[in-house]
Image 1: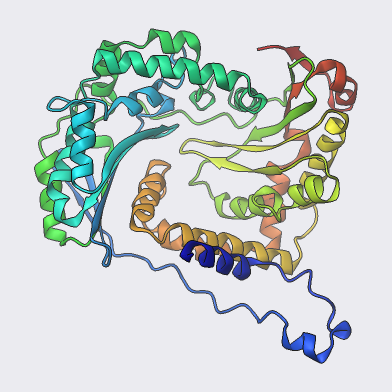
Image 2: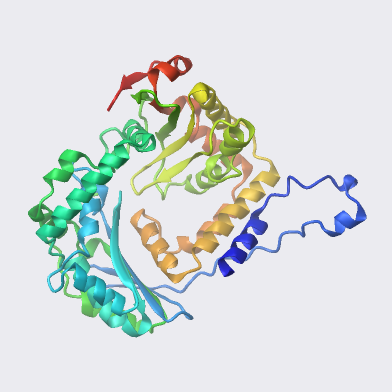
Length: 475
């Protein structure tokens, strides 16, 4: 019930007022029932963050939180993610991260799970383009034991042969299923079109790469990638600062780096030639459409206005492309567009799944919206609505202490400082319509967009001729 009430409150807080009847048409009784004005915005509470660097180079951030008797730990290792994978081993980082808690020097996978549950929490890991994140939580009374378990999982995974074999079998099965989904194929192709041979294009596995994974490879890559001088540990919860730092020192103080540092990820390409690709899916009754172009790094100067422009254009149900293609035209159940930002670059990606007969028309509407936001100033009411939406969503998503720790770690991975946590909303509120127009013209320009369509060439090929010559392939 509480969740339902919160959802209703959020919907009311960010609902646009554009559908209200004109004041002249309202009766006195109706006026009494009019929606009240928005309340005054509340700033996101900026936590006090204690920062310390251990002698081995590990960065530790402590964020005190009162209330729930729980501790949250997030260990982020920069440069350990997909960008570190060899060209022949795409998405290897994902399998390595998934196997970290499937066995370590002192415990097998069952013992790890039982230990975490016995502390009232859990431990797990995930990979992204820019790094690997290992997270753990427990009751505050178990802060010490859980810190030790986190260290065991992150530092001494054993990658048991049976667990590796199971992970490979599961990955192969998941890939077979994914290959049947047009959205999966479209995303893979648009990433290649934008990034070319850059590591950011390699986020999905291949059968050959999965089959090539071995226990020795996992152990070698773990030793090479997970190291304290490229790591951040975020600690948050109702513990004392001195206790938190002491626990970090005990669990990670003797962690030593192995071998030379991995090279930093090279800057992503900024000038890819717009490709035209039609991925063959015979007898398909709809098309998966993607548009894409090079974007910017998460720390770039344009990132704040570009984030707001992305929200206005395609970041929510009330965004322009969704209202156009879904609500007005009825071409799709949902359309979206926006910027994706990593540490060394980014992408502009939009897309929708549409009926065959409107594939070309949908692309025309995308291009028209891309052009409009780059040439016309966004009206003040639309600007205000989207600023409130961005600010409100950000503040709600960062209410829980685990979310705060995760946001701090993710920001650090992509090159943003701890202070960005409290700076984001005020900076969004200061964006002017001219800034939105200028960044949109720069990054959403129709002529910059590569186009990928997954569909039946016989059904959509003629419609696509208006957008250039398409390479037809089944890969």
